[in-house]
Structure formats: C-alpha cells, structure tokens
Image 1 (cartoon, rainbow, N blue to C red):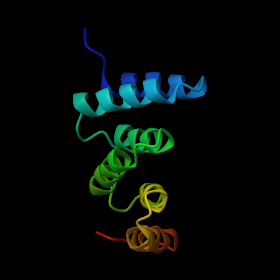
Image 2: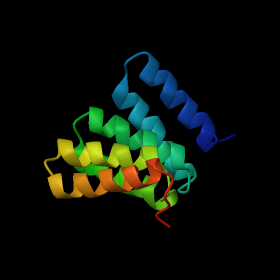
Image 3: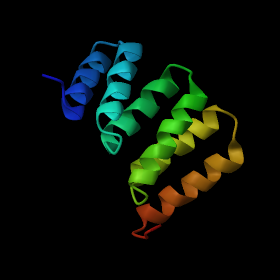
Image 4: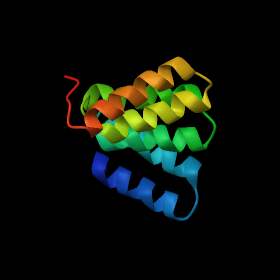
Length: 109
C-alpha cells in the first residue's frame, strides 16, 4: 500500500520536529510526486530546501505553491524570502508586494 501525499507530508513534519531537514525535504518531495497539486507539500518543500541552502530548487517549489494557490499570502511571503536569500531583490520585492496585497484583503487571481 502506497503512502498518501498527506502521510508523506506528515512524516516530513516529523523529520522537521527532530531537526532533520534533508529527510523532511525528501518526504515533502515524495508528497508532491504522489500528488503534484498538493500545495502543502510544495510549500513545505520550498521552505526545507531554502533552509538547506538549495535556493534555486526552493524557488522552483515556491513558484509551484504560488501557482497552485495564487491568493495565499504565506506562499508569496515565503517565495519573497527565497528570492532574498538568493540575492534576487527585484523578484523578492514583487513577491512581497503580492503578499501585501493579499494581506489587506486583495486578490491576485
């Protein structure tokens, strides 16, 4: 019996709880392979990859999260952080602006 995306995500969260970020990232990645539209998996994968210093991959996961939920403020805030860490200031500011719009009740799509 294969694990669901949610089960893999939960296992990833368990790995985060004990400080094993690389194992968490693997679980999150698997959750997105099981269900490519699993927002929580993409968002968590991006954050774990960012914490692991894999910024290009983190940005890719962050972009997937914002594509799946374009009106999710946390997804845009996280993507802004990923861009900042990668030195992409213009992109970080654009993502932050989107998060701000959502924070004051606006919609992007």
